[in-house]
Image (cartoon, rainbow, N blue to C red; front, side, top):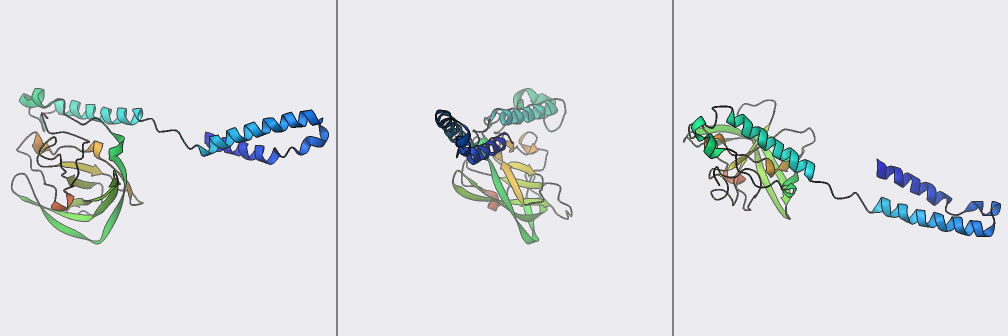
Amino acid sequence: PRRAGICLIRESVMRNSNCEMRKALPAGAVRRLCFAFSILHFALIFACTSGPSAPDDSSYVAEVEAGRAARDQAYRTSDDPIPPEKRDVLLPLRYYTPDRRYAVPAELRLFESRQTVEVPTSTGTVRRMELVGTLNFTLEGQQMSLGALVPEGTRQIQELFVPFADLTTGHDTYKAGRYLDIPPTATGLYTIDFNQAYNPTCAYNESYECPYPPPSNRLKVAMRAGEKAPGA
C-alpha cells in the first residue's frame, strides 16, 4: 500500500513535470522548478520499479521455532508418545535449522477418481488409504511431486497426509521416513513447507503403528529441513 501511494504521487509528478506554469513565473524560477520536478520524478520511478525489499525471515524462523518448542513441551508433559523414562534422552527433539528455501509453492493435481492403495506399516500390517492426487512443485530447480493421501472412506477432506522419504532417510532423518500434514485449500494452490516435516510416533515408541511412504513418495534429493532422527 505504501509503495502504491508513492506510485500515485509519481503519476501526479509526471503529469505536472511539463511545467505548464512557465507563463506565470520568471524564467529562472521555471528552470529551478523544472529541475526539482525532474529529480523527484526519477526518485519516484526508482521507488516504484526497484521492487519490494527482501522479506525478513526472522518472523518466519521465530514461528517455526515456537511450534517446535510447543511440541517439545507437549511431549514432555504427556506419557505418549514418549515414555517418561525416555524423555531426557529424546527431548528436545532434533531439527535442521529453519530454512525458508524449503517452503515452496505447489499445485494439487486431483485424480478423476481416488485410488485406493494398501500402505505397509511399521507393525507389519497394511493400512488402506486413498490417493487423491499429486502435489507438484519445484525445489532448487528440480521438478518433483508427492502423492497426497487420506484415510479410506474419507468424504470431506480435513487434511492431506503426505508421507515421504528422501536421501537423508536412514542417515540424518528417521529410517522409516517423515510426514507432512497439509490443510486443503479451495484453489488447489499450496505451500509445501519441509521445515514442518515431522517423525512418525513409532520413531519414539515402537508400539505405535506408522504407515511407510509409498514408493512414489521417495524423493531422490536430500531434504535437509524439518525433524531429524531421534538422537541424531
